Length: 213
Ligand SMILES: [Zn+2]
Ligand SMILES: [Zn+2]
Image 1 (tube, protein in one colour):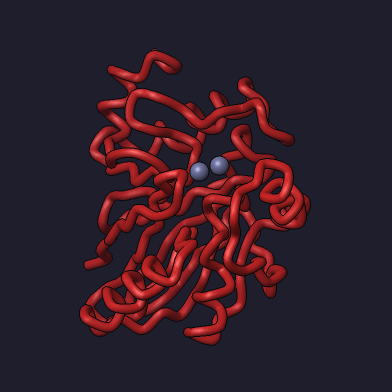
Image 2 (cartoon, protein in one colour):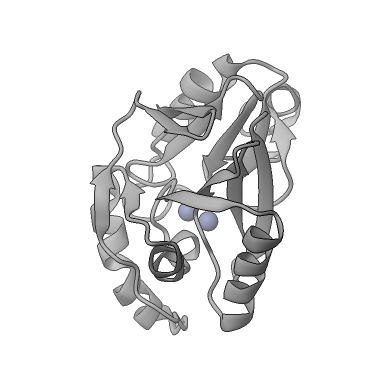
């Protein structure tokens, strides 16, 4: 069975996720570690669970989701995988950090591979379907596991909220359409693991999300 383990890091309280199965193979989504202590916490959990990281993926490339890319890429010998439409967002991170005085331990490596909407991410015995869910960011991706009924949603959908749309490449109509057309049809029981805050479900958000009801 495919499982999800979330860790919350950095000043933005960003949720990163380890997705793994019985084989121990693990995909690292949005590593947000931005201090030696947070890097150590991540490495210790991976080691204690006997996981073998095999892929490094960003749902989107806002700074809070990419702080740990360098650490993970170096430590586990992985290339960064993102959607091509997020390249300008990733490239803007050092400038944004400087503008706002946000300390960043390491600059992210460039992407080593581009993920296409509709492709399947395979590792161990698991499969994740790639959904194109722009609106918060120009080319945000979500990752749906049909077998275990969950979706890694980045900053698209939060418990009773949605991602902000005032950053470059953001668009409210696009975001609402992404949620209604890509996330909601997955089914009410599907668990949503967001980039910030607690996990929720599609069904709960259909009923209780003020942006979508
Ligand atoms: Zn974001
Ligand atoms: Zn975020």
